Image (tube, rainbow, N blue to C red; front, side, top):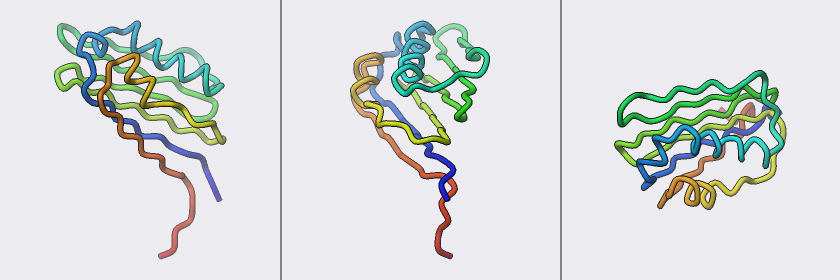
Length: 118
């Protein structure tokens, strides 16, 4: 039984200015939504932290959710996509390098709901 797939994405070496820019980070997630044909419920929820802080965003999807948290002080961003229906591969590495300047991207893919042997 499969209940979907979850992608846990960590981007390192990102440009701090990009991680602080709500428009850039929102544009990144909107690109994911369009390319993977995900369906948003309502509107996204966004928060821009003050000063040198980063951005947090969340889209509730009919398929589940897509979220991002940025850490300019560490040059890092974390993304999470959980989708209950099969989706094509997304080029996380190249897109995060292009948009945020990431020098390393770690992508973990976790099948959800699969029964494991005890």
